[in-house]
Image (cartoon, rainbow, N blue to C red; front, side):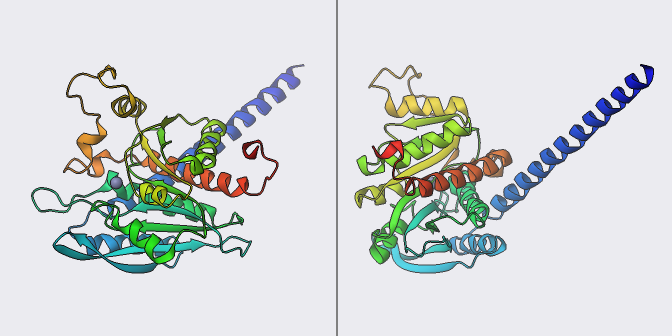
Length: 318
Ligand SMILES: [Zn+2]
């Protein structure tokens, strides 16, 4: 009996030691992966648009992809400025020439003092997340090609995405998943104002939120990003972002509550709008855990959309 007790105790302690040795190592590996992404975001805080572009190209090459730069004529009225979209592809297995676009703008605003904002929340964090999502999708052998496009000059009026459509059209694009502002918090925001053609895309997002038990907030009225360019072209598209839970709900009220009924104090500005387009948009506001969470979620959304086209009996198609 005593021997049995000792043996059981040994087994139990061995079991718990085994569990303890496995779980912390997975947690540590995750922390390390998050730190890698945080350091990638850091590299985008550069003084010029050209240096920022170099940061994007380096990021892509280090992820094992070969970027292509597409120049376009952009700039503002009376101040023409060449822009540069950056793209690369994760090949699918179908050879159908059909693509799911995974997009984020990589440009930053010029501040009132004439300096380029660090632009890490808006939008280097998204850039890092979509490139990491592509890296995670590389071995998944999806049906569609996944084309990452990093747009330039979004901040000047969605110029990069307009130039992209002017050059390539959207006939090959099954859907577009755009990310803008995804640097802190654990709540994913998604726009629901991208036209009826985008319904299956928002439903794919909702399924991912449900399956992954991710806190998500849908916005009937969501702030504009490059998604609007695709809406104008009637392409299925969703725009995603991340925030704190309370920030996401405050932003929902600010954008969606009937006039005078938001419950927010007069003049209240949701936190995220005190960060972006300002000197506050710096590495101090970027959370490493959000970067990996965003990357994994975006990869899951792309996979869900890819699968949607291969389940003709899927209830979503009814
Ligand atoms: Zn942005």
